[in-house]
Image (cartoon, rainbow, N blue to C red; front, top):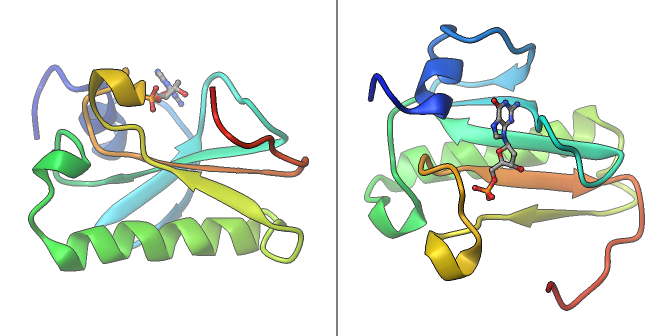
Length: 113
Ligand code: DGP
């Protein structure tokens, strides 16, 4: 854990969020600035700065499987949803702890801006 990392603090229960799903490696909670009716973030419990720094396939797999579980729990698995991992400055990453956005509940545009 990194003391100053926002998502580490959330994952370790130091900041109050409602966890909507979790497994051994990852936790899921709602984005503070939702961009769609469903907007959930899935983050590894362990500090991983971004996808570019990921080395553990089991951990990454657990993050993605939790994202799929969130989509089912939020009722968008049938209608469809988008999973996004912003990586680095050009990718638009603002929180430097790997996270998957799970977005759904409306028709999403493509390509991204
Ligand atoms: P990104 O730009 O991909 O790094 O996304 C970071 C997301 O994190 C952004 O959509 C807003 C969200 N976020 C930032 N601070 C907080 C917070 O304190 N709580 C929650 N739940 N989400 C946050």
